[in-house]
Image 1 (cartoon, rainbow, N blue to C red):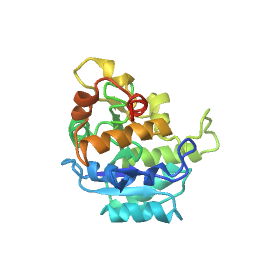
Image 2 (cartoon, rainbow, N blue to C red; image 1 turned 90 degrees about the vertical axis):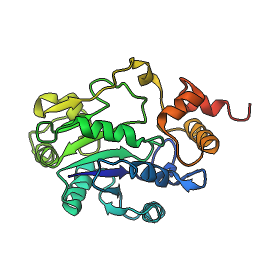
Image 3 (cartoon, rainbow, N blue to C red; image 1 turned 180 degrees about the vertical axis):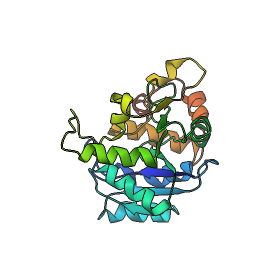
Length: 240
């Protein structure tokens, strides 16, 4: 059983409270949850957030999903709690700044992965062929348990905080885990597009897309409407 997890928090450094900023009348996190819930190959969807962030909690509950709370800067622990609550064999990680998260892309990646063989599968590593912002990462329960043990060991050394940036371990130490990369068959030029929201300019672009295309649209519709533009480029055209 693979459970979808929408990961969110309020304390983003470049665009604070971005997860609850409005997109066409709904909080960003609610828009992402609604899109992920359209995926057919996920058993169900939960939100994983830090404790004590009531506006974010309320937005997730209003969007119709169960909320699992865990430490803001210890994502291994937060995801460990998701596994305990859901009993999932694997989770499908989507971050709340992926405002164009697409159920067809999610289903494609889930169908292509084999949790019995691969501990980490994604369309992000080692080669990205979708725009940045259509990220789908699948982590098995066994992989997270082993990662938890490794990063708690006194012998563990890492140039980054592996408890917070836990998926980087799969990318940068592939020999420790069985890793599968899932790619599109089309040319890779789409990988240069930045469709996740991290800055005010990217948020302005996301607002423009949602106001133009409405509450639901596919990633291909965005590509047809705006061409090969990142969100910041779309945002710069607002009002011109």
